[in-house]
Image (cartoon, rainbow, N blue to C red; front, side, top):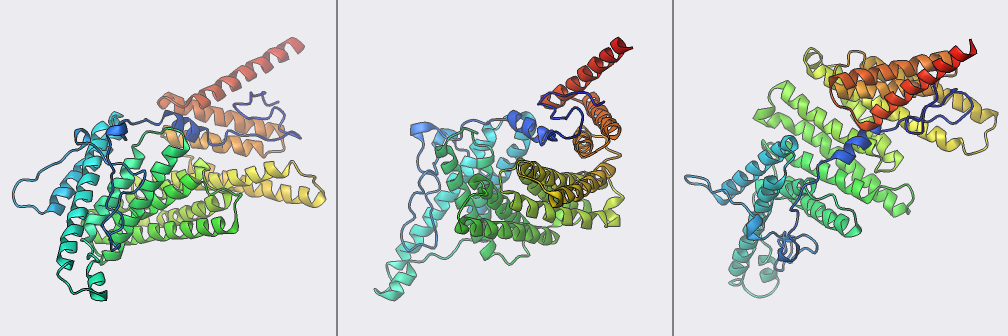
Length: 458
């Protein structure tokens, strides 16, 4: 008999008749609670208005964007380049330093300098855009009055790299912003993201498509669009216009991802296949993480997971990649995609259990269990050689889910034991989330209790 588990573990004692529960997304939720909160996203009443630049396509002077705050001089950083350098060169220097600090912040758990440099980047972008607008406006005053004069007020766009830097900085600072709850904070973040998407769109529209940074523009647009979708929720309940907008946003995000992967070949830094594969895997990981977070409606999640699976299977068929260390990363992410598909089907089954079932429903349920089991077996096979804590934790969850769809108690108990053994292997490698520690303890305590009862009976 399989040991009884608490609600945390979600494992059913007998595995027959009662509702099947499972530890859905324990790792993702545990990681979310530990995500580092950064500081200094805004400085209260001392902050001025930030991306005042507004829309450069407007015929009027750029106006302040409500809720998007500028930064006081104490929290700005400027890096002056030696030798002859254009404003864009200097701007790029600040931005590259900022992104270097963003990478360092992940390891050092300190975001203050990264935020400061990003603020400096945004402030400098705002200044350059204002100067550009005013210069063109002054030139337009010499034009004759009338329609031609109105056309003269339209400033020509700056070079695409400027808009790429501006949009990327706006997006990046939202990743490091304080994770405070509240509608006001969400509104502020959404305004940053909307302006980021606008600036990146200006970069895309002005590019030839062969620039070394072109793929970064497309990738930035995809990330920003995905975050905006997640921020909006993509809830199941909504009117037809909302659903149409979500589908449109999803299609644009996937198109941007495909464009980014295609444009990588123009970047000399991506000439090595392994480097391009790493960025491709990062894109797939991005969409799978969004699906795993369950911030979107199930239908949208399913389409993202399907896109990720398609890309991963194509990479798995590439002999040049399967012979490298990248192979294990591809297999891990593909297993994750299959597990997410199985999890979505299990969720749908749980919802159907509340409704009256007839014989046809029971037959469909059996077919559904078999499909789920096939997905989970495939995922488990991909993770047979798992050696990292992350991969082992995923394989453990896969085995638990597979146990939950078994009719035979012996088979179910065997899978539970394999799952717990896999979690313990991950624990030996390093620290694991508390949810899994509790799961191990529940299993061990339940097994000991069962053994004690068996001894008394004998």
